[in-house]
Length: 195
Length: 209
Image (cartoon, rainbow over all chains, first blue to last red; front, side):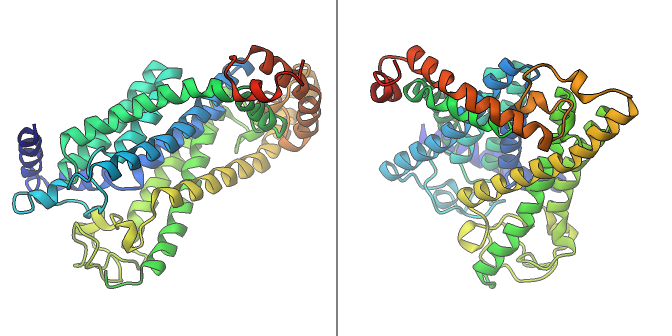
């Protein structure tokens, strides 16, 4: 499995250096700022996008679940990281990879940025299938660009995606544990004319 | 890295805030133009507001990623490599622009927590700006279409629904009054409907009956 994982990242990263425009596109989509901002904007957009009061409450609860799931996903990734310190591909295959991104110092598995992207995408998908698919595409592009850049293995990306989806599902279930606090919070923000 | 990480972090924080603010403002305008929340429109017209939103998002992204061309930072031409350890202070070149922003957080880039904090502040600022300019939009709409906001306002509309034809400040007292009168019922109904294993039901279940 490790060998297939390494073969894929080495083959994919081997394509870099041929088309500069594509490499530059990957450098920007792999950046710490662009895709995470897209996910944050999606959550912000959800908060304001309902057209009826009932729809708004549903969207806003989904947004709150999304944000809570992001925090929980980060915690779960950290727990996995401290129990399995998987080295990054650019460390294990330094002589075969052309690194397009800075060298992160945290463990490789699971891909934290991908987990974050898939949490946001799953939240969006639970509201609107088309919007959700666009967000899944954005999260996949984020993972692909980090893979192409040589900082993750394919299994890290898949692991991150699974963590994101499962944690979102778990968080929506967990919400019932805190009700009516969550609904009351949304009602408070509505009292401040912002929900 | 041949530059002080704290200086780099401050630079990134200010650039990121502007990036997040413009993009949040754009997203907000795009979304509220679709949902008809006039009290948050930057312009009096839906189509104009929508396109302004799209424009703001594009400007935000372009500004953030092009800024290294004219602003000094840890991306001096010739020093931008994949890793951020050997950066020099200066302006970037076109050739190295795409990788200029890829700076590790230990070298001064923003980590996830800092981004979350700056994004929240930027989103709140975007909402405040929208609420201020929305007041003007509502006034122009009301005058332009010769109608009274009170007539169009659905009964008891508050929150974002109340902003459909009212400014933020005129909507706030009604929203807060409704909140104060509703919250007791919301809480009691919520406790009654909650799962048996809800923490809130376990703590407040008896007292709310």
